[in-house]
Length: 240
Image (cartoon, rainbow, N blue to C red):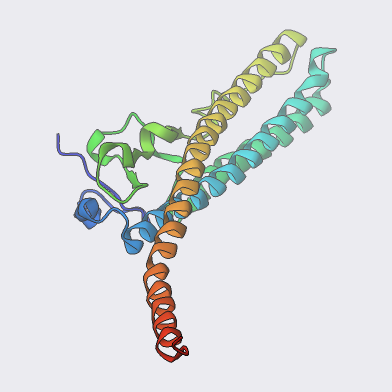
């Protein structure tokens, strides 16, 4: 299968309609080229922005789930009367609607990121790759779908089905449902934090390469100037 590569320059590219074979593959013979190093750094910075968007969304989802959990807790101790049950159901319904709305609206560069398009389970030809180096070698091509593996996030996919609170037993089942959802979000966060740390290390390496390259480029003119000054001094020095 011919894997496609997304340079991550501006936004996600539709792999159905776009040619994703980017000229990163031309950088193999000029591994210290500042332009290619700068492009790799740009790509990583964009990925970091994507991670920030996902992180903010995860934090908000966790907050909504934590609030549902807090609302559910009293049902473990005693039965609710009808008025309490009605009020509880309304509050939890609002939180669940907010969660689904948040998931559908979370975007990066105009593309939704919690709709399953970054899931590892979609067709491999639809996977997005981040070029995090100056060559097209496999170690520089990071598969965002397998690295992040963000499924479609919704109350349904998080297992937040119909919630009952008529008895403490039903309240306990609902509490377990919410805790399982929180566990899913925690695992997703851990996954992208691990990839974020990996990219951070690559970024440090690229920053060093850029600094070294700039230093190397500035050295010849400085050396030539020093030799010119030395020749001038030597030419006009009194001869003994």
